Image 1 (cartoon, helix red, strand yellow):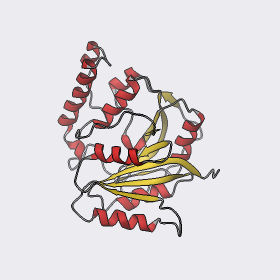
Image 2 (cartoon, helix red, strand yellow):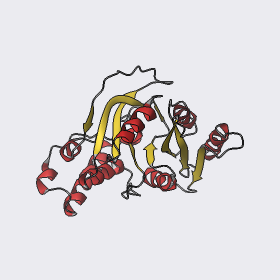
Image 3 (tube, helix red, strand yellow):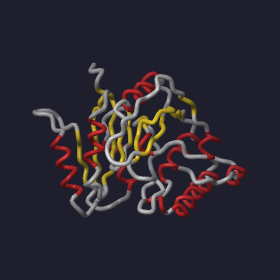
Image 4 (tube, helix red, strand yellow):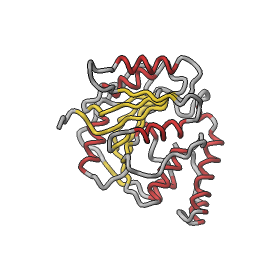
Length: 257
């Protein structure tokens, strides 16, 4: 068994990301423990993104071997949930890690996160911390000691501890992102998983990097009121389905990042 390759499929939704996708994939290729495959799901961008991701695929094509980067084109824009679900369903490895096309990973992310999950096979889902970077790659020296703690139901009700580019989970999980929901759809999935009893943990290391502010005026998260509305809708739906109690609906609602 090749100990330099992790049994992990990396799923990256690609929507109008021609300027950033090469950096994202380069951060995956630069892992000290390389994931077995990368799946780029082109989400009907309507610009040059499909041509760019196909070129990225060619750039990492091993001579005479199976493609390391796979490209799936959805043809029309279906949103990030559908794109992630498509990649998840196409994954061939027992673990799936998510990355966004405008973000990147620390070189030791897979080695640390998969390494921990491999030693704790009962765990269904892990996340870690993120850092902010302007410009190129981050140069972060990791501490030798760090905390890994279980994220319980109450923790997740108060705050979303699972930012999508930090998440690694078991491919076999049956829950999926809710297609058509463009706000707080990731939070909804984490809530359903944890309230269904799947063990989830957080690694207190910065192993992913955002290259734009989550709450910047130009990004999706600038629509904070929509995110908050869908977060509350998530809670209400889960209460109606018997996952959470009515008092949980009255918890404080700080913006969950």
